[in-house]
Length: 500
Image 1 (cartoon, rainbow, N blue to C red):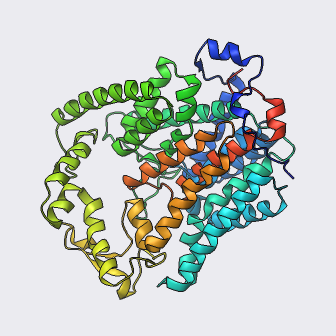
Image 2: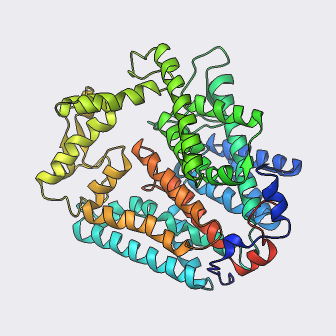
Image 3: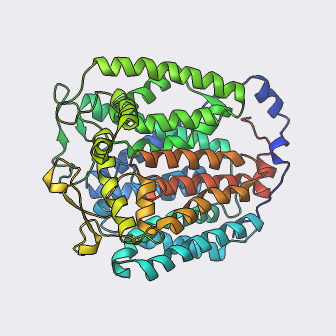
């Protein structure tokens, strides 16, 4: 069982003898040993094989997880998160043949029962319990679908309980936050290489085989990979594999810097993804982590200058006739805000906001018209046949999408409102940001807050954010890492806040 966690209100100012030297030399480069690089590459390739539906990949993933648990717990917890969340390398329900959440959520709740509960852990468990009870209660009382139909999406929604698994994994062990950040950095650099290779070299779905907008029955398989070759069409690699960069913004703002070639990998991966909302979110999170008005102004001005230049370059490159999006999707995204400010009716709003606004407007009108704005409709099957849960959408051009499930919208905050109404929306925000108070005064306390805000911004662009497990697991991992870094054993073994 884990040791008690200490609030240690003065932990931020407790530095080891090495800390002043670290502070005087400013930021340092991330550092990963050659052997760690090798093992991390092997693990990521194993996940790619799993995503390509090669059984050997599944076996290797399990073996490497067991090895990491023995030799590097910081790597183990992040590897476990990648395995459970998929993050474009795998789609767990396809390649593992089972929904992980049916096992992870009960195991995490069991972990809460066996943990030795210090004050912060008790407070977290109570907060999570209240959040879960209210969610389940609202689905039982007000959900239109059967409880059985709601169970799967509800488990995904409640997957923040994952935070208990890293706590259990470090039972009797000290946690080194800087080793964790260096480990995350290593895996994300490998992910960037995979995105670049898939996007610009093999041009397909080989290294990141599950970065589709949706599956529609099409899978890239190890014996039949979908690739177009170096001279073929350049695909857009959807961004789930890049979500975990949210875990690196705070350390990059405070302690670490990248080498020039590492910046090139990050830029290359972002170009392969072509997802401006993720890029905007990460830049905003990096600026927010600076912690001083002077730095806010400096990095804010720099970011504005860079995006202004990219806007004009992207606009000059032209728009796709099929998607009406610019090449890098930067100018088209910014132009949407100008169009929104000039919109005069729902059709203008839908056209300005592309598919996201067109999805949301009819559902928002409907929820108010039927008096469900306080409780929502509960979790709804996207393919529901219940007439009460189907909305006619006259704002979309494609007739296939004229009728849609009421909560089949991309914007996370709107989806939350349609699912659980104003009550659920308030509880959702209250839980995500309310638990920040549990970490108040702890070492690295602002780390979780920064990650939470970035994930919330992801949701505006229609990505997993705080509503679905890939985003929620990242938030839970950030929260757990702060608790672990403040264990008495961690404070004793790693007393310095700065890299040694």
